[in-house]
Picture 1 (tube, rainbow, N blue to C red):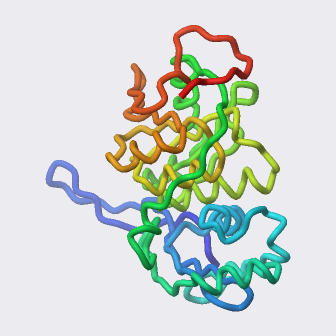
Picture 2 (picture 1 turned 180 degrees about the horizontal axis):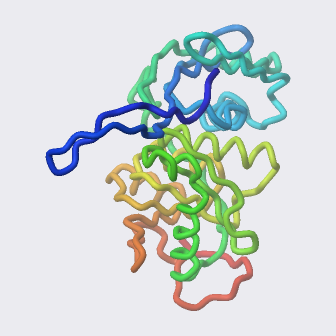
Length: 276
């Protein structure tokens, strides 16, 4: 039985004294994504919200254009892993046959097994204009993540990706041992619920690499906020995609790396055009 958290016995040393105890730690298992009978990728991840992961991965990888392109999705639990078995429309199946890759990705691997440098740094989608956010909204949004991280509260060992909007607060939050997987799960959750990301923010508890920007752009969110710093390539990619990249978000502030016009001390809540 695949569960997201396991209780493990361990020996504890404190002040040179040993004692016994248990700790809850996150599960990690191979997740095979198959399309029309062929394996496309095998990722290591947390066995939780797997329908969201399958849909989000498929969207973020460009395998499908819409959740409706998936004719069927079955979660097959095997002794040594889980198969996310999908059947697609014929035109989608033909497209992936040209770029299928048989890979075993390490935990949360974002671009393992790709076949060219150009594919690794592919241009991200251009995001919609969205709206302006106040610093208080951004900090409030980030502070809302921790109480909703049920797996991390038990284990202190998983990443989270969430979507926040001014009208609803945290709309969805997904967790995984892999930061890319968490963001794929979020993408799938939003797609399955037909939620537009154009007027909110993607929030991350991880660092920002280029793949995280590419996935956020595919989701269609104009603003992303992370607790850790971005890479230089992530900044350049966010700039080109029109994404406002906010990082090093702490309780006392944050740093805005691109498209600073979406952050202002005072702004009306309504949607406005932002000049890049």
